[in-house]
Amino acid sequence: MEADQVAAIKDLLGRAEEAHALFEATELDGVYDQQWPHWYAVYAVDHGIGPMLGHDVTADQLAAFLASRYAEFERLDPRPSEPWAEYTASRLATEL
Image (cartoon, rainbow, N blue to C red; front, side):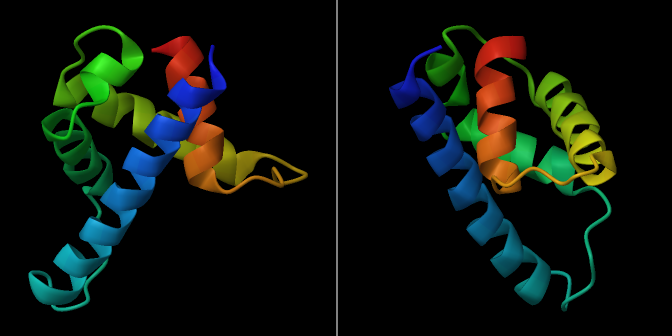
């Protein structure tokens, strides 16, 4: 796993987070999006996560991965010192 690869994925997840926050605020009138992993996954696939990973990935595969890693992140005690996007980026680069 290369640091550049993880940094690129982390950046993409951060951009997805920003775009999703805008989506929730404008399209959902501030309502929490229960389907956020799928939204993030579609965004990430559309914005080039496949080449970052070195292989194609579907939005459904990525959504399942994001949901499971978020649940894992929330359960960890103690909580990781790194933000969720960084935690998930390093796992994406090595596990998906």
